[in-house]
Length: 558
Image 1: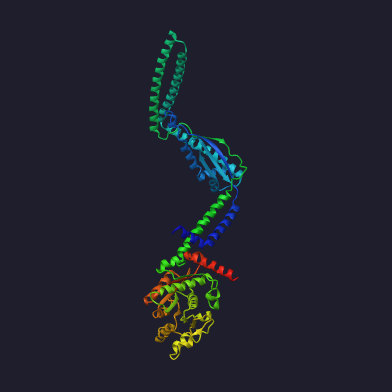
Image 2 (image 1 turned 180 degrees about the horizontal axis):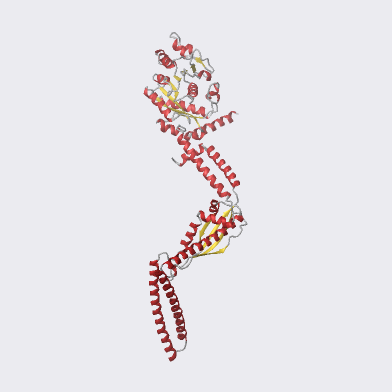
């Protein structure tokens, strides 16, 4: 569907969009009033991972700070941690509330770790933040102490492991001694190199350099022995993976928050309105697809396969019994846009008769209440106003309405004429206020309308009417619900199907057309009735022109 199509859908159901936006705005106001101000405070810690082995470089010996921070983050999500925080803080708060208020953050490429607490009570937020830091540090120390005690216990139970541990410690001390002596010798060499050259200094410098080489060689031997001892120790007890403890130190305790967090009222309101707008537009499109009716002239042309002969806007006068001449737009408001539309329909029918003359015409519809009686009456008036001799026959023998529109007697009428073989046609033609227009009302309502309309007498009367008038218009019952229209359609020159915009279902519309075509009727085209101003499509310009023409005439007459 094109963008203009979506815009038409939205514009058609603009009331729905506006309604949901108003509901969304009211919901946003209500929700913003219910929001409780939140206070946030943060405790900052410094993390120092323990050394895994004194023999490895620092960047290898030190565990990743980020890995340690991730371990703390996962630990702080456990129920045991939140229960310990509640006990430490002395608060009777469910662990779920504490867990929901806690958030953690590791500052990338640093050793800083932040614990943030958000709560509607600033004092509770401060207490939970500081208690969380204390519990985290205490539990970290307790866990590592337990590991060290386990390692010590395992060493005491294993004599070989104890000897290896003692050997490792002795070699570490010896390595430290050689490191100190090497540093002292290197310092002495540097001092002598800065002094003036002399025989004694040169001899002393050579002696120190020889001593440095000997110390470095001894350190290498001790380092090799220490590496072997460490490997043997790890092989004997894989649990020995840490020589030092992980530590965490509080750098900044959580202060008491004095100002609440921003409520973000505008952002929340815009988000709710955006959701309401999306729902309303989606619902409008959904209703458009669910609505299986024809609403615009373009849709009717595509569905029917034949261009619409006429498009009638919504009349100010409602159809139905009791409105009488108010429905005769051609008389009550001859300069209205819908009156011009009937004149355009008259012209379209005239073009349809260029190849095959139209002396008789049925006006029908798929179902009741679509405006066939309204169209038949006004079409008869406009044809009579053009100078043609017109006879309007009410063949709707189930719910006749034409006698109400023209304020005529229903009896005697068509049924009486058909039931009396001696009756003369001219005796049943009733004159109207419109020159050249006569009406045959329905007459007495029979129990079997279809049998009566299909009788030879009915066919004879229809032939007499074609010889009497220039054009005969039959107002027939709905063709998709009863067989009356199909019976009459076999004996007329053309059929005009009325379709009410937004009411006639597509399946019924096509069924009506199929029923008429099956009996050999010539369906000249459809007429779209009661089209909303926004759905007129290319006919909208025509209605605008008629509107301005009407006002121009009113101004001239005034």
